[in-house]
Length: 193
Image 1: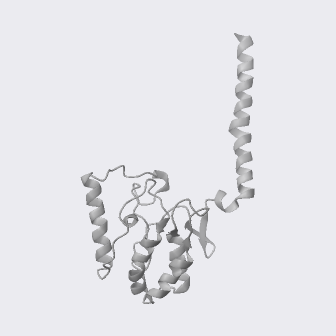
Image 2: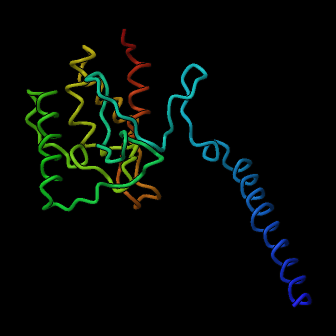
Image 3: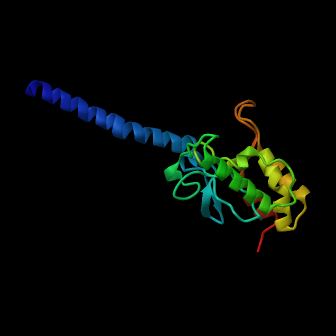
């Protein structure tokens, strides 16, 4: 048995060193050298302080800002440690109540807006962390944001257009707008008090 134990322990130690130490260090080093922003969490900074990540949504609630897609993470919205959807189907009464509540909140925040509400403003995603919304969802909110900031809707629509990201490689995904980047651009264009 001793003749089998020594080679087994040697292989175990070697594989632990290779797979558990050397490989992760190599991948981390290559990632930091080739993609430093992404390897660092795609952090977004303002005045030298990290205020978020371009990959994780934030819960904006002020009418002066664009609101992101609802988050189903717990115990708080956009909780990266608790990523996951609500796992509720379209016939689930809890899901329908949540959607009705979100529709009511959007209408209460912008009672003059008679446009159709884009689905991504009332339904949570599978991850619960979406940092982006559709262009339609951003345009839907333009009037509310412009009114709250007392600027023209055309200025807000121009910011949306400047921050619209195309489909990846021209056909993957949808055109979209990163909510944090758009809200930071709003603050740069017209700081609030």
